[in-house]
Length: 215
Image (tube, rainbow, N blue to C red):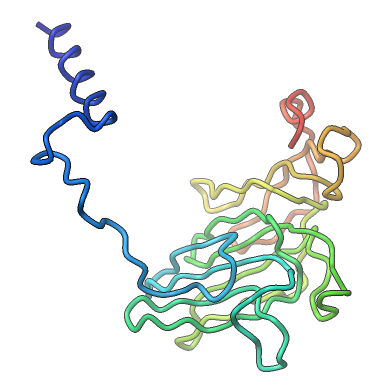
């Protein structure tokens, strides 16, 4: 009986995938997604921010954006309010290109690492390889905070995970964003950030990151 039931379940799943079931079960004419607004910046990263439900978008330094900052520079981040469908520009001071990200225990979003500055595109945005950025609600508003806290080493394409005790596990990445098959560009280490998103300044080697190139 169990085997017959399993075969039936597999049949239903396969039929759905192939679109063989009657339209009564799968209404392919229905529009499930609708465009409600634009992000304003290329959405390399996106996160839902507590407690308001605002959405933050984060890009890299590049020569395209639909939004500008008060200084008329291009914006590489934006904040979207789904209630009124409004998007506004946010400023960053380090290049967040392919940074890692997770949430602190207090609800703030933290992004980690990034890439080199591109002064020919924007001289106001600096090196992001070891940068730590924070965003959370303060006085009813959201802005990126970059007080100068640094990772223990440079990381492009870093991975990050919030642990049960509120600390942040940060691992891997590239030291320079160059050839992914050149082991000297790899960062096969991890580090720990405290509950406030501050690095302890120490890197710890992980053999699995050595054995499984690229980062």
